[in-house]
Amino acid sequence: MYLNTASVTGRRDCVNNMMIDYKTFNSPELISNFRQKGYWPGKTLNDSFEEAVRNFPDKKALIQDDRVVTYKEFKRATDRLAAGLRRIGIDRGMVVSVQLPNCIEFTYLQIALARIGAIIQPIHMPFRSYEVESQLRFCEASAVVISPEYSGFNYMEMIQEIRPKLSHLRSVLTVGGRISGNDFYSIEEMCETGSSDETSAKEEQIDADDTLLLNFTSGTEGNPKGFLHTHNTIVAHSGRTAKVLGFRDTDVFLSFSPMTHTFGHIITYFSVLSGGTIVFVPKYDPAESLRLIEKEKITYMQGTPAHLIGTLNHANYVADNLKSLRMCFTGGSQVPTKLVKQLRDEIGCHVVNAYGQGENLIHTMGSTLWDTDEKMFSTVGRTMIGTEIKLVDETREKEVPLGEVGEICFRGPSLFIGYFKNPELTAQTRNEEGWFFTGDAGYLDDQGYLHLSGRKKEMINRGGTKIYPLETENLLHFHPKIDRVAVVGMPDARLGERVCAYIVTKKGQALTQEEVADYLNQHKVSRYKIPERIELIPEMPLNPTGKINKLQLTKNIADKLIEEGKWQTE
Image (cartoon, rainbow, N blue to C red; front, top):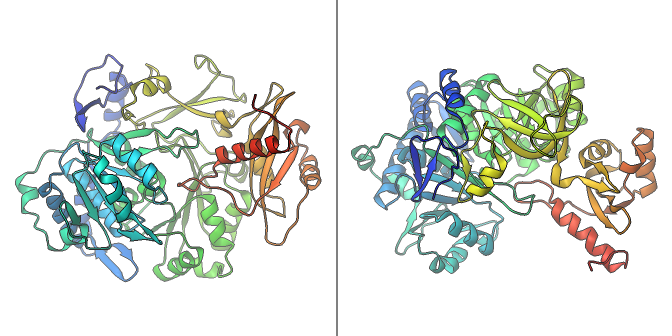
């Protein structure tokens, strides 16, 4: 089974016996350009890791609670783990699923699996039997790594329940608990007591075009897709990003995003490529985060705007205790102006806003390091060196003029090689010139800055007028009574859709639809964009990666209208 439909031939990588051409939809000219300009330097994750170990053997690499691991100890543990994985039959091209919170062992697995050429496949912690079984079956995972019990849930019972249904699942590995039984193994025991002799005896030459990561989209479209990255597409990209942002070996990294999500997953690459230190927070907690920033002198912090807002709004927040921070990396959309100003003016911290998807990591990036306030607050930045974007109309064949909304297309060396087991979808989202159609909408200004309008599928069609929710949401974020807001379309018999806003108010605040309308009118918002209904809720429904689940909100308002007799499905 092939992921490519292009006529380009070349070296093929094997993922669970499925042949994948890394040149999928990249022309020979593009690939030659990536190599000649150093965008694909031909280095694997293990190459970069070995270099960090040589340069910083006794430096702190990993910190979790009272555990401190130096780079030398990091290498010893991952050498043993790689040997242990091979000993139980895990080898090149096999998929190993990992359902763990952010922890040291997750990082060990990233390095060890990359070293033997196996593919890491993260599974979100909130997933239960239905989702986990489906994902393990789809990926044909040879092994799965879990915490036997975490946050009140018994993951071992879940795996034991679904394992008989998965003939390809050879082994279950655990972190944080010793489990006896056939084909059950402890990661800690492998790392602590194993031997690395078998690794060197069976060393293979892992290529930078080998598949490194199989991960899934957030599922906001209702149909999560498995995307594949190689060492070249993801590690080389992380190295360029680290260089652009000036990461150094004195940096101490803290990520609030789960390592099962691509944004959180790459924290390891950032740190290893710069010789820095990672501090782990298994589960986001604003009070604990504030404590760790002060204690460990965190210099670099990353997370969604919601993570950062929650931390800075906590009762324990004291700006002077966070002066070690020199950079905050966030993304997804325009960062709220208030958040940027608070980080910059109160703490003295630069803010980086990266907009992208798992498929290509970063479309564009903006920063207070180099952008004006006007650009930082109204755009999602410009493309990184070596990457390109363009905006096309609904036919996907014609570029739209500057200032006109179109679908965002991306091309560059960090683009994924294809969707796992879905060559048809790969073909639908790529063209022969190497452009990837993102499904997002926006427009470019005359300076090359991208203004994000939102997901095409989130667009509200009100009587033929297109409304992108992001613009209204960004304005309402500044309403003094509003904590969080999500704008969705609600069905309407006459117009097709109308605008509805789901709102979480700040503690103790009441809010009416009239107040919302008045506020938007004061900002001279077009009348058709103003919500015609608001729903006040105690908290936003989130998907496993921390994004607002708009599908759930859209269904909720449709169900409410049906109950009220204002809408019928037939």
